Length: 357
Image 1 (cartoon, rainbow, N blue to C red):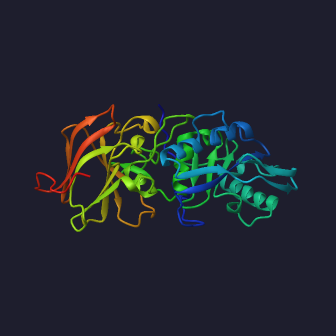
Image 2: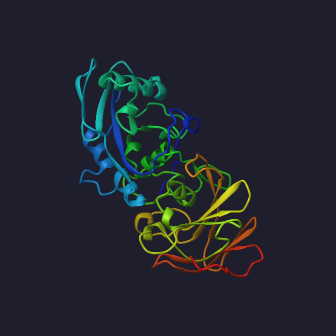
Image 3: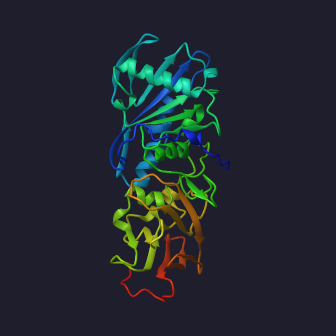
């Protein structure tokens, strides 16, 4: 399966900042573009099916975010709204989609020029100061050849409303989720100091397929969402939990009793996040560390703050990994049940005196 590094990195600017919101109803608007010399390949129906499903496409942005969040974050279509354009007359936001005509803009003028023209046209058509007044998240789907640099497939603004896609890449479920992740204030997921190299979750590389692979977020991003907060445990020497000995379950088994995420705070500048990356169900397409215990580091900060993460360990049966002050030890792994026996012990300690979590 072909992996693609994702975006124009310098475009992840802190523009239009707002408080990240990982819960409740969040509206989405997809913008299809007709330029002077090109048109977004997907028609409104196809684009809508790939983003919203519409009872036709079973795997889409809405379905996978809903699945990974267990309904805590609910993406819905932008409200229908009538407008008027001097370029195309009456226009309508309907079923979460709108088409913008730019007869005086060519793909040769580049993505930035086209992006700004789309924004101005939406503002004029619907009498708003910003497209963010039309939806919480707005996806610009550009015609082919619009000149997105770098990997040339997409980019988004951090903690913002806007993401921009190169034509058919707007139909990739992993890329849709990746760019939405940036809009939700997620940084990239890295490995070995290389951006995008953590393939265990959505914030690494993306894939051109419209419906697969099915995967959620890595341990650090999963903690950031707060979706599994009731199944998360923080381990530190000054808190009520100084060690852990018990069973970790994957996010696909979140409704089952048990623990899904661990956070280890060891006094360094980084926190460490641990999960069992169970390769099943909603996470059955994970591309790295499947059915292993993964350890991911992230700069310490508020839960919803922006930071890139680093995959530092993938552990199987009878394997261990040391971080400053702690050792992570993996015992039995059951891939059918989706469980791993895990201990996180202070360095030099042989067992966990605390009650199993």
